[in-house]
Amino acid sequence: MQVLNEKSAGAIIFRKKDSEIYYLLLHAKYKTDYWEFPKGLIEKNEDLESTVRREIFEECGLKDIKFINGFKESINYFYRRGDKLIMKEVIYFLVESLENNVRISSEHVGYEWVKYEEAIPRLKENLRKVLTKAKDFLVKQRSLIGN
Figure 1 (tube, rainbow, N blue to C red):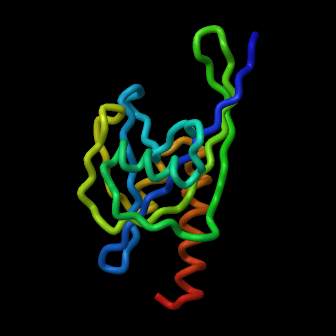
Figure 2: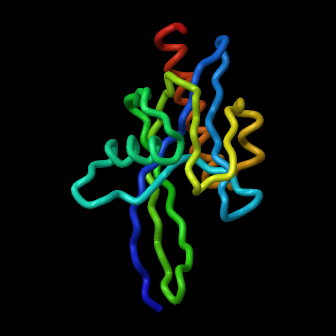
Figure 3: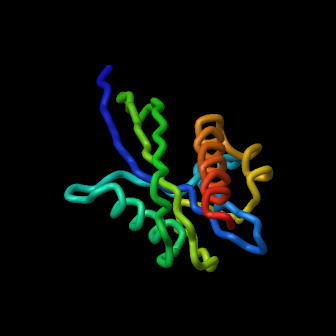
C-alpha cells in the first residue's frame, strides 16, 4: 500500500466577550457528530500563516483576525483515500477573531462560539489536546500581561 504525506495548517480561533473566552467550532458536513477547527492543505508557494488566513476566510468568512505569537501545535494521524494511506500533519495556530459574523462554507453545516468546557466533549482526542494547550497558553499569557 502506498503511503502519502499531507501537510495542513489551521487555527484555534477565539474571541473575548465580557471577560470570557469563546472558541469557534465548525460542525463538519461529512460526519454528523464531528466538530473541528478550520484547516486546509498548504498550497504551492504559500507559507503557514498565509494558509491559515486563507482557510479561516474560506471556511468562516473572518478577515479581522490576530495571530497570538508563541503558540504552534501539531497533530499527526493516518486516514485512507481510496487505496492510499495518508499520513497527515496539521499545524495549528492560535488566532483571535476581532469580529463574530461567521459565514461558513459548504464544508460545514454549522458553527458555534463555545466556552472551553462546552467544546471539549465535542472534539476528538487529538483536537481536545490542542484546545487544552491553547487554553492553558491563553491563561498564562493573561496572567503575564494582567488582563
